[in-house]
Length: 166
Figure 1 (cartoon, rainbow, N blue to C red):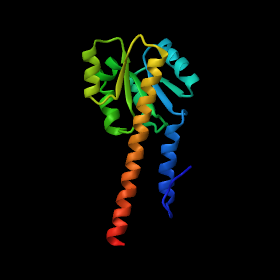
Figure 2 (cartoon, rainbow, N blue to C red):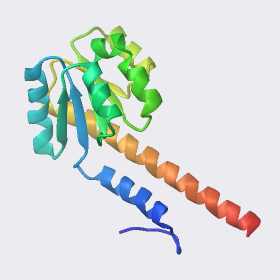
Figure 3 (tube, helix red, strand yellow):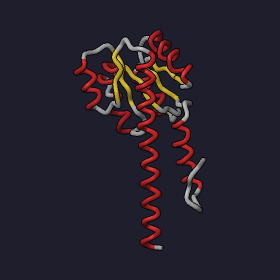
Figure 4 (tube, rainbow, N blue to C red):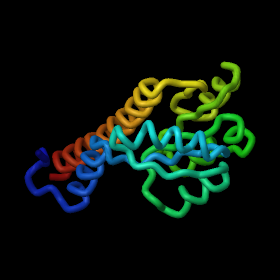
């Protein structure tokens, strides 16, 4: 059910639909890892939970997919390659609404560096399916709340402007 103020415009309704889409499990996850087997394992864990997955073998391929405008709700990428290629920083700068989750079998300081560069969370390999799903759900919930908050702020600003000029 949509709760919109009377006279809500088409743009407002589209933004609300965007937030509603994020609450569904039809989110598209871009999974980056150089090993196809690892990507397939992630797909086999995410797909039954209702997520749509797309794979990328390298940070460069992941960047190309993101830059193409293809719908991506979350980026799951290999931590070391993403740090070396500055993928995390570029995604955070150009696509600030796409949460980045890094994964790999690395020491904690490597993950901490990725978090400082803008990653939302990390997943240490090997991992259980439930660990992956909790992190993905939490990142997508964060995104949903971020977009919802932005929408509320825009509505509040509009109402305040109407009161002042109105």
